[in-house]
Image (tube, rainbow, N blue to C red; front, side, top):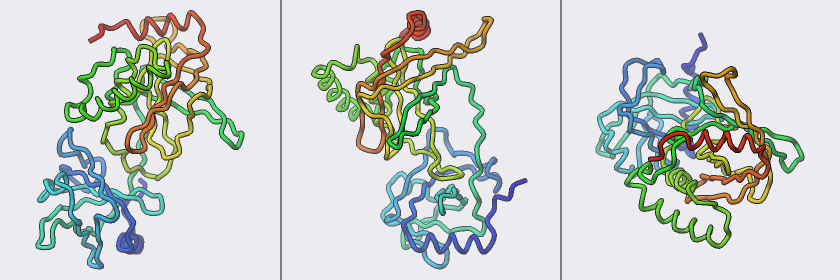
Length: 308
């Protein structure tokens, strides 16, 4: 079995790294059942990690992390066990400790055991996946996997109430701007795809700390019908550009027929790349070449369920 706990020397190196600063961390309240990572569970299904920037923490030589003016979302974890995650030389690490309230404010004591985050084997069985093919500036050919994003049902018409109520005001501002732009640019079709785009751009769900930092992640599929596919990503260097044409292969899982998967090949051009206030991007890709029988398949596939 792979060793996950750091040695004493490794822990000292990490502690010095934390003391030197410039280390953002995420904090999540948990049910602490055992030191084994597989036994650590979020306290509530609706609780998400809270990000703390490097300037919000200070680590002393006694191994105590002092939180500088932490947000209320962290203060409410006081007295609870939390999982603290961060990167050290691109390696994902974590430890479990208690968030304590002291005279100096909120504090986290770094325990003796610091663990490496283990790789997670993907087990999801998606109803649809896609591969996007394009060339980079250095002329190398790239193919990127695309998978559905949780919380974005692809074969039900998007509805506004899918956006959390506390996010709807910000989403409405984005939608009004996007609709105004679309009327001038005439590039959004009936505009129904703007709902999941707005939903994605106002999300505050953090990307999880992984075993290795900086791995290329699949694009998220936010929307698909017989005219377009919307892809999203959270990357500072978003590789897709408006006006560029790409090749795409979509694979649909079938049931009750002689074949298990139907592949649909197409080309698409990016009509517009949408951005919010952070590094989230959503690309509205309009199909430019698609076999008529495949268009009919997509139409039936994406309209077969009751629109709600």
